[in-house]
Amino acid sequence: MTPELAGQLKDYVAQHKNILICGGTSSGKTTLANVLTEFIPSYERIILIEDTAEIHIQKDNVLRFEAKRREQNGLPAITIRDLLKATLRHRPDRIILREIRGGEASDLLQLLDTGHSGTISTVHANSAAQEISRFTTCLLQSGVEIPYKAVKTNIGDCLKVIVQMERRPGARFVSEVLEIRSFDMESDKYDLASVYTRTARP
Image 1 (cartoon, helix red, strand yellow):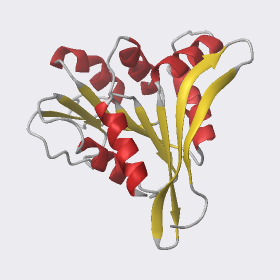
Image 2 (tube, helix red, strand yellow):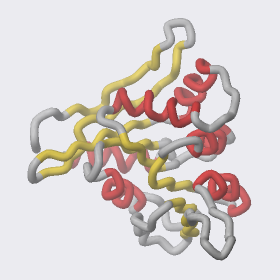
Image 3 (cartoon, helix red, strand yellow):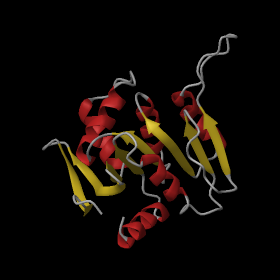
Image 4 (tube, helix red, strand yellow):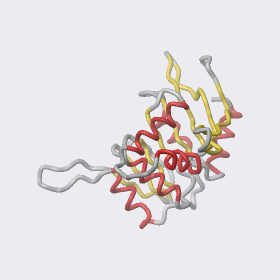
């Protein structure tokens, strides 16, 4: 990425913007999430939620949650959704969720809707525009009965920055950054502002 873009992303973290990093397999989503956590002030309490430990935050005040599969000795599974629901009891200043795959998107959005800003999370999508559709699909998989346009309105209110990663031979780079300003129910469209676009290989 360019130095100017690096400064912009640093500012987003400082401003407690909710950031969603998207991209294909091995495009650098987790790597970028690792980098962005370095800009979080050391005095803030971070809750890190993963299904596999891949983000390594070099801060003192970090509480790590890791999902577990059901074990043969009868111990029940601990899901990402379980961990998100338990997060509030630990007074988080920041919530880092490594990858959104399904209904946990609803639990995350509920946390964001109650004022927990500054979240960094990732989702698999091939474009910034597709990311919004992918996140919406994950929300609808939660089993919570929410009107479709209400879901979109909540996304427009809570998610603020989308960062698209791309992988090409010999390079992984940020290809697009969008700001989500709002969702217009009448036109059924998001008000998106393009902050950065790069289509050529760096």
